[in-house]
Image (cartoon, rainbow, N blue to C red):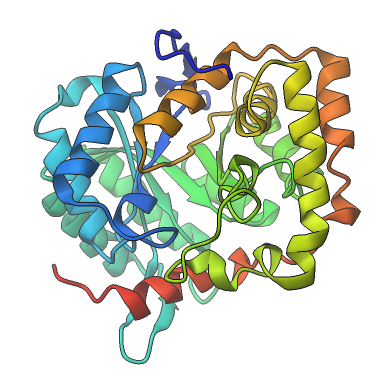
Length: 345
């Protein structure tokens, strides 16, 4: 399979506000659980350092991962890396309780500021390169939330502003208050609902696109097809990974597996290469807890796909044949987080 940890990772502009990042980022969420058991701090630090040594400089976390533990872990890793060469993204806006596990979305100016100060402290840094509103608080005008973020930019605590899972109208209104550098959304071969409106809008406004779960939460890496999903994983209750839906979705995996052989790659590499080929303004952030998977992800940059290849790969995953909802809109996995990993910080 096409694994090559000597691949040079290109640098790209994310949005038109000046942020430059590695074309492939690293999503840190999984290092503190959700998909698998949390890794030991030293192992998490090791994989972040390894990713950096291989050319990945764009690292993504959030205050709700853990909760809080992920930022602490990333902060420990940053202490062993040159800060000026890292593009650090974190998020605010989701809070909640452990017992019962509940999710609360907050976007008031006071909360924005307190969340930023707390993240800076946990990460042990003076500034955040890209600060996202993780989810939009519909009870607060987006203009007020972005207005406070604008102040944080003016104070040097935040360099660039992002939105996650925002509607087209919210993106437009936010961008009118202060330029939005990036929008983070789920985007993969089997989750493509952003293509109709959000991608064209971002390109019109000069906003970069950061796809999370570009491997379909590990599905295209064979999770639930070639290996079983851990019982303590959020995926054990994800509609696409269980029962009849999974049996139907295995057909999709098999088609991608067949096409991958043609491109001398693994199914995961082909799926990730498809996302990477969606444009220079697209920077996916797959995460992993294993060095071999990190190397395979980097190897996906060697998979070259022409227009006909991209269409063939797209056509192998007809959206109307994907069985089960993606469930992310309900943030089930973050409720899982609160229920299974009580805050320690």
